[in-house]
Amino acid sequence: MKVVVDKNNPLVAETFRQFGDVISLGTKDITRESVHDVDILIVRSETKVTKELLDGSAVKFVGTATIGTDHVDVEYLHSRKIGFASAPGSNANSVAEYIVAALLLLARRKGFSLKEKTIGVVGVGNVGSKVVRNAKAFGMTVLKNDPPLARASSDTSFLSLDELMNADIITVHVPLTKTGPDPTYHLFDVVRMNKIKKGAILINTARGSVIDGKALSDALSSGHLGGAALDVWEGEPGIDTFLLEKVDIGTPHIAGYSFDGKLSAVKQTYSAACKFFGQKENWALGKLLPKPVVERIIVPDEKVGDESNENMLYKIVRQCYDIESDDRSLRNISKVSEEEQRLYFRRLRAEYRVRREFSNTTVELPAPMSSLKELLTTIGFQVEVR
Image 1 (tube, one colour):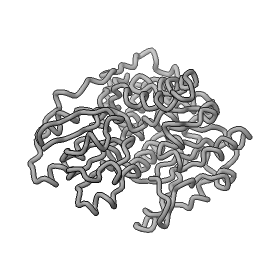
Image 2: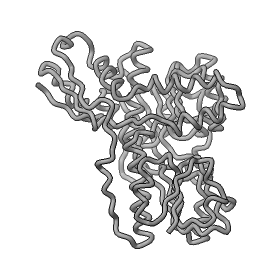
Image 3: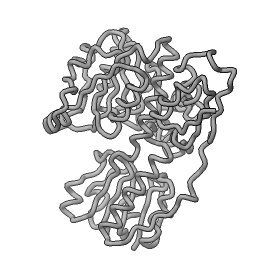
Image 4: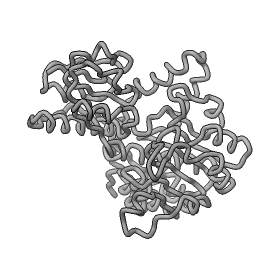
């Protein structure tokens, strides 16, 4: 068979080689012409998989190494009997770790302690459930909203969206939908924004259009909101740079871009392709994995009693994932022309550095700081106490 893969997926060519000839292309080179005689197509969210791309092609299977499918015309694929797979949950750890880094940075910059705050989690699926777990480990009061889960379970802890509006921090983890019983397009519009408690912080790592960008911009300008962290933007890759100037943290849709998360997505689409074509899975690429930037963090004895657990945690997390670096990179978009900004945004994503998840790093704690072990373990680190 002939396989075309988006080269921005890690180890994707090596993974799909068992199916036949693999051609690795950049996102912009995945076109109607380049996939015409292809059997398998593996993409990311920047590629619109529609009739315009595939009509008349030989494609039998499409995989998107992403959790979302709003860039894929699934009905068209079904009508053509083209196999399809996405990778739900593949980057959940990555996004949850991004939220940890964002919360710690916001607390440090604004001078508050997380354990004193209430967080409202909108959407408690693969990502949101991990955010809930981590927030509870921080000692935060957690409010949960997820209408589909509430209807499907007997869990009485789910609240209405209105009941989350008094939270100090609201973080959004829902798919982008415009129809059905729970549409999420502009879920946070001007009406909703005005219901949020004055001074609260809004975080979005879901999809840009879940939040009305203008309403958010106005709420920040007026001082109604006390801050915001955005990883996703309406109109990507053409983002609102004026809104970027107003948010506390702005990053180029990379919350889920850990190497581990992207590789997990590749493996999920590979498994689905094997099942579709009746082939045995033969994935054995462990030796090719890059080492984490920091394999071991040793907290010295002299740090005992010097600073709070949250401050120590901020310093540990920052060594593994420096969210401020991603923020600075995106803010440099203002230095290029408006015409080049879309390309710049895409390039930040396509050329994103290797970022390994917390589980690849061991933290060594002195015995007097052993109380940190449970928290560090909960958010993913390996921990040793000496």
